[in-house]
Image 1 (cartoon, rainbow, N blue to C red):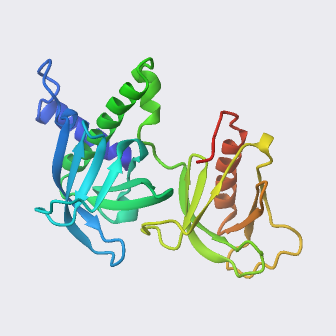
Image 2: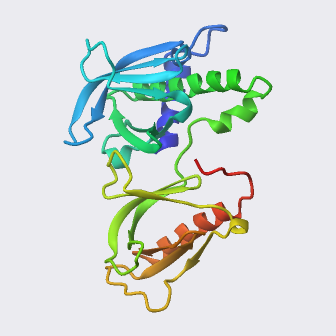
Image 3: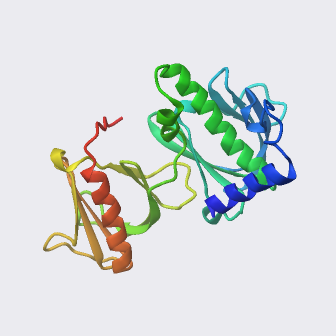
Length: 267
């Protein structure tokens, strides 16, 4: 769906709007400042309301305002902490975009959409363009080919699992999980603004591992039976999946992460 939306807008940009036909012409998303309104989901009430967003390359941030004429922004988001990914199914709109960023050392999610597919794709590309310029300044010796992989990314995997608490005697509760690089975050609802918690996934050399099944004697009182155990230096995390195929898919991604040997300083 993400690629289809991007591909559709690229084709329309090239053949309908002729955006690439004039050498030297500045593209919409290459402007130093982008301003406009997006429908944003309220953190507490879940309602989508019109909000003004301003993206500034010079300031290196994205701001949004609860009122169009407000002088002070509701939030100021540094572009180097932003990730943006298309989420039409989760948001329930074909032009849905999820923006995540760090706030007080926690990941904050905001969910937005626009009636125009072109407009939401332009916002997505504008965020990436500002991020790329920020990285060019921060890493002057790096090539664009080296910097582009550091821009926005899709999540490795998302979906429901059940989990139990640290004492492993509490009941298993259904949670929505998002695997983003080495961070496994879990939410009560897929559209929650903040995660209830997260698990950092290190590599095997640092005593992190993932395996099928649950420890002997585990009281599994949840609805699902296909277990996964993640071992970390601090504790074990126990999960259950609805199907064996889902269990195997999660395990594949967990093991791929734990096999990576690059530096992964836990922030």
